[in-house]
Image 1: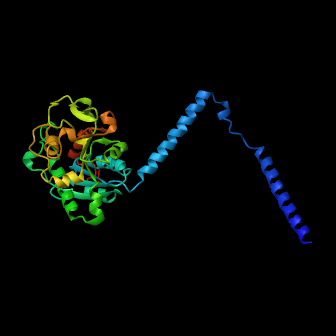
Image 2 (image 1 turned 180 degrees about the vertical axis):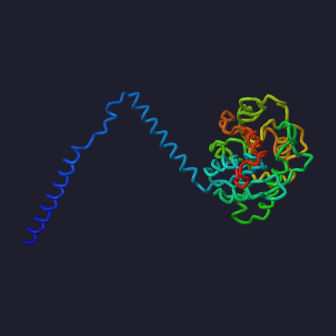
Image 3 (image 1 turned 120 degrees about the vertical axis):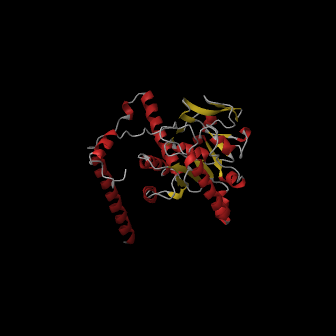
Length: 329
């Protein structure tokens, strides 16, 4: 009796599974078949597979960017009040939000922090430090002066370095150990940065270098590399400078900044020598670490935002019809 019951149960289960399989098969008869691959030529199939592989590689790369167990990058950005300031900082923020383990040090050229930058940073979603350092009047560019006449941002970059050294000196334990691997980069607020650039610089032992596009009246400037070493600089102006590079073209280890307290930017440096005034206290040319495929790829561009023309605004102001000053631009 018990055996018959078991056989009956097995039979019922077999019948139900078969019935479900039949129903599923009948349902599939009405479905459209995705036969795209069958109609493709061999070249089309290869192209399709390559596209799918590229998507997979991008997904893997994006997943890797989410890692937190990587050296931290401290980015020092000098900034000053002007009509395009908030727009520039917004564009920069949209890049930095995609870079893991980034700490943004924003240094205003102002006697005190401004409400605009204070509120902007608070809403940015980034880890940041907000500093300020006013440039002495005799070192400021005057209206109509060419941008190259005097070094810009020296005081603000030095203020960022001061903060880093004080922070590093106070660090203990795991925090101090993590700072040993950290990197410092000087990112102006009007340049354009590839995300890949930050992964290139992340593992810097002393000073890493790479090309910069659209700078110095050239398509790009770059360190020239032979046998893995930087031997000279490709630039159209005074290539014999100690370090003939743009500010966007190098990063330094925080360890080097900490162990060389005399390394700073000379606000009185002659034109084109601001970078050299800092780097010559850290390394020689032989110590430079070429990145970006031995300095053959451009991953940062020295772009500049056009100064807005305010003729119509000025005309309306004279009529008392100017834009509402309470609206922040």
